[in-house]
Length: 249
Image 1 (cartoon, rainbow, N blue to C red):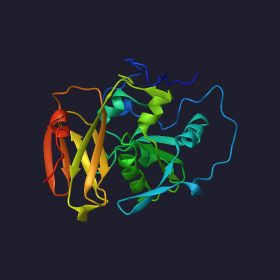
Image 2 (tube, one colour):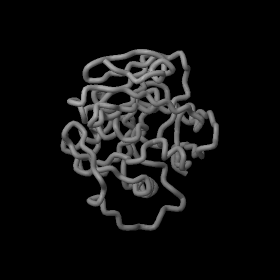
Image 3 (tube, rainbow, N blue to C red):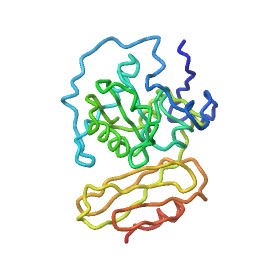
């Protein structure tokens, strides 16, 4: 049995568990590899050149389907990097994943910096691939040659009952959608959502008409406050306040 403990939960489960020591510091970072599988899938051919791409900060990032990512994960043929915030990672993350927060929050001691440039790397987040796309794009810009973002995102991984780790692994979360409007000249730029009392972040692109929708799957206190940072304005409030109306400048 691999040294890691892990918990797999389905979308209808409600579980709180302590899995390993995930307090602050280096112990909260895996090496990027999954725990392995006793029934490793048979080798099959995958053609990443067929993946759709999305542009993040001028870098085209290939979006890997979850079926392919889970195949690589089971065979330990890819290293997994969590692009979310440290608090999100600590509560629940893909078993074995390393914390590698998306820019502009990437730490100086980012563990991926020690990975080989030709290593296959898959980044993920929950929105479903905006933070992971930003992180993957920066890795590609820095010379990493085999980088993908998980297309369907972390919540699809949870819903499928794939291996998870964390201090509070739970599938019962409330989904919040924060809708806003920016000037259409900012189309393609990112709007960032940041929790003010925790290291939690999400992102969403501005559409051609200037609209955007931030989605957050959240199980924390409804009293917590969040900041929405669009290119031309910033708004703070609780999730109830931020979801009550369309945000504008």
